[in-house]
Length: 400
Image (cartoon, rainbow, N blue to C red; front, side, top):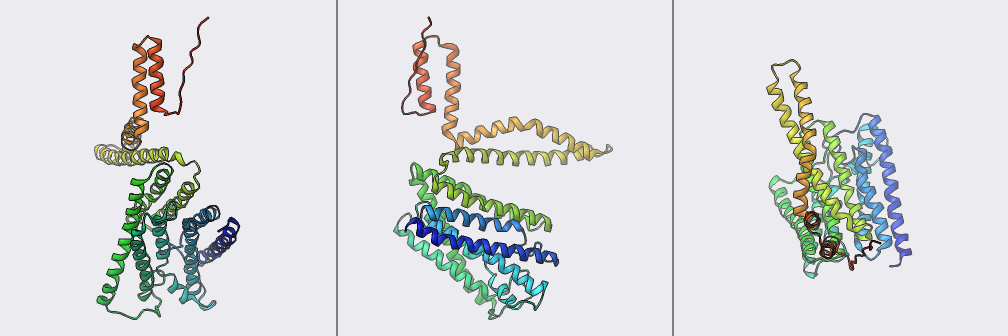
């Protein structure tokens, strides 16, 4: 496919997504003006929830027009389908609750939006199978990929045969045949097992690719794995937030949407190879500051609770405990960060860790060695070990 033809195909898909998101935003404003919205909206209660679809389509357009033979770009463009489900949910809420009877198709929209997350998850699973070159690791992976497509496809059909999701749970689903629970369970179990098998197979494909990869492909996979790692973390945080207040749920949903938007950015960087080799530094910083936040946050909470118990007999003991805890955590920041950095470098950033120790050893050697030729040879050796240049030379100016 030529680049011109790819642009002619990709541009309408990207433009359609943008139009759907604009229409969704307008309905979202109308629904909130009528007092609708909030945590009960599964997909589109929060404006930032549109960010993943927008970023996926934007990056997908760039990849599809520059690497038109790679299906990953086209799959990212297909993820713009999420904007359709965002729009359908707000349209159904507007026609059924905000202005009943004024517009047609409200119940059809409420039914269509059910299970709207499934096509997006399937597209992500296929991207995981095909990243980064657009091909499966080998022919034997065709079966797991086909099982994933079949399971998610059947799941999308099956979810429409039950009651509707919030906020449409009070609306009758015309597609619901009223099956007994045993029949529903008998249909759901094999579909769920097939979907789980497809998802785990996609993860296994990435692991096998990474173990076999070298050079650019390994760096590409590092970007992908780094971005995909936010999904399990985001799901865990989301599950915890379900027991919190509606405001907390909204905040977590917004943060999770922003985290998901990192995935297409990382895919675009990896495939288009823009600043590809900075990923080691990004992983190192993420691990360091993520662990630092957890450690200092736990220390702060523990110190506040202990301080409140200790100073409870004094007036304003709670404020005193908070002040003391803040000072202690501030004092711990630099030493804890240095310790975590050493652990991360030793485990995940070994080249930098070895280089740092080599330089430290050379610094000690400088204090003891006086022979210039020996120092010059050791300096060239240190440069070779730490920077790994193709060629290194040392010029010394003679004193006159």
